[in-house]
Each structure stands twice: as structure tokens, then as C-alpha cells.
Image: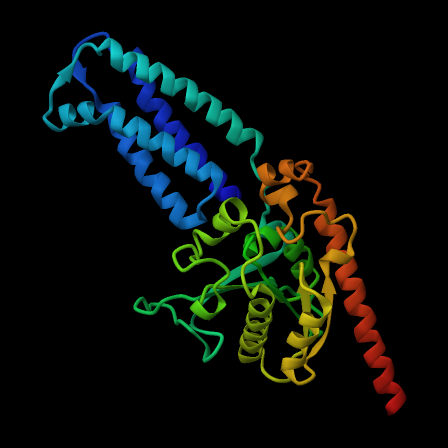
Length: 355
């Protein structure tokens, strides 16, 4: 999310330099700074395709479009290699207005900037795996270099970096199935505290037709979260059943990646216990149990992820504040690992008793 913030600042900066050129015209010259306007518009479009549609990204795109169309005449003039020695009064009025909007937008973006989550500080790595298929027939991994298959599932794999102090202990893999109002990145402050302690974490996002948590057009990676947060805030039809299906699909993918001997542990956010039990039963005993983030009273942003670090504008709407100390995700990760250790210790004790 912090990369998205940097991209937004870059766009605002390009647009700002495009506008302040009105103060630099003293003699006739090529109006070269105007090329920043179409460049900013292009980056703002790529920004949405990279990080998804959001209220701030939409605002930045609107500003880029406004300033681009205001400068169409200037772009035509520079394409013809004509010089400029003055600007029309109407253009100056529009540009002053746009400068005011840019300054306001820049301040707003800075005030609501996300907290930077640096994987290196947690000694962790992140790998994104793409899958095609659906919940009915199963998902198969799209290998690197393959471009003709539609990606219907994104699996983010977080793990600790290899180091010399590793004990070699095989720990359970933690599974997180993300809902329609969040993305894997919204759980990263929590996830990195888990991976730092040696747990592999799989966070899955599913966008297949039979797991549609939004209408067809909106059920895309770059659009669904925006739709669920701002257009239709109510639960999707059959959301409970879809979460069960995608939870089982994530478990199947975990088995395909780690084999039938590895143990798994589910972290849920907003799922009822019956649904989680149904998901955990699909791995033939490989799933040790689950931890519900809702069980933590301090976690007040279910099922949106840890918005105090990842989405400050949304956090403010919930009367929460930006938190760069990572208190809630650290506390939640500690409680999760505490419950997981209690389960594993209990199983170890049962095995010793049986022996």
C-alpha cells in the first residue's frame, strides 16, 4: 500500500510541475513541461491496474484527466513545435484552480498515507502465485512466462528468509482466505509478524465465476474491493457458501504446494465457526484448527484487515487512527501463535501418552 502512496505522490508532482509552468514564461519558448500532463494520466491509469481502484486513486485519476484536457491545446502546439510567450486569461484561471486542487489533494494524500510495511525488517519474503480454474473443477498454477490463461486466483506466499540460525523445525502453514472487502495486502502487518517467527503464510484471493462475491464486471481484482466498500456494502448473495468453497480451494492449493504430510492452521476474519469447521474438515486431518481474528476485542476492523496501517481513510471512517507502532497486528499475531502452540503442545502430549 505504501508503494501506491508513492505512485500517487509522483502523479501529483508531475501534474504540479505541468501547472506551475505558467509562472516561467518570460520569453517565447517551447512549452515542454506540458508533456507531464499526459505522462501523469498514463501513470494514474497504470496505478489503478497495479494497485486497484480506490477513492484516492479515483480522485488522482480525475485530476489527471482534468489537467490533461485543459492542456490539449498546449499539447497540440508542442507537437507542432510552436513556441509560446503568453497564456490566455481563461487558461490561467483554470490552471490556478487546478493548482489549488493539486495542493489540497497532495496534503490529503500525505495525511492519509499508509504505514510502510517493509518485508526486509521482518526478515521475510513475499511471492505471488497465479492460478487459473474455478472452485468446481479446481485450480492449477500458471507457470511463469504463461500469458494466455485467465488468472482467477492470486495466492500470496509469505515466509521467513533462510538463515543460519534456523532450527529446522517444521511448523504448520497458516492459511488466510481474504473476503470481498479486503486484499491480502490489508493483512500484511499481521502476516509479517507470523512469518518472522518461521511460519509460512498463504493468503488467497479468488475471482472465479463460481466464487463471484460481486457482479461479473466488478468481480475483478482491481475492482471488487472498491465495489464492496463503496457501491454495495451489503453481503453478497451466497457469501457464506462462497467463503467455504474458496476456503476449501485454498486448502487444496496448500496441499498441492506442501504435500499431504504438512499441517495447516486457518486464520479467519468474519467467518462463523461452522463454516471454518467445514473448511478445516476437507484436508483429512491436516488442519490442526483455526484462529478467529474476531475473537480479539481490540481488532475493530473486521473484515477489512488492519486498516490502521493499510487504509487510513477507511480507518478514520471507523473512528480508528493511523498506528505506526503495529500494536494491534503484533498483538493479534501473538494471540494466534499462542493458540497454535497450545494446539501443537496438546497433540505432542497426546502422542507421548500414546507411546
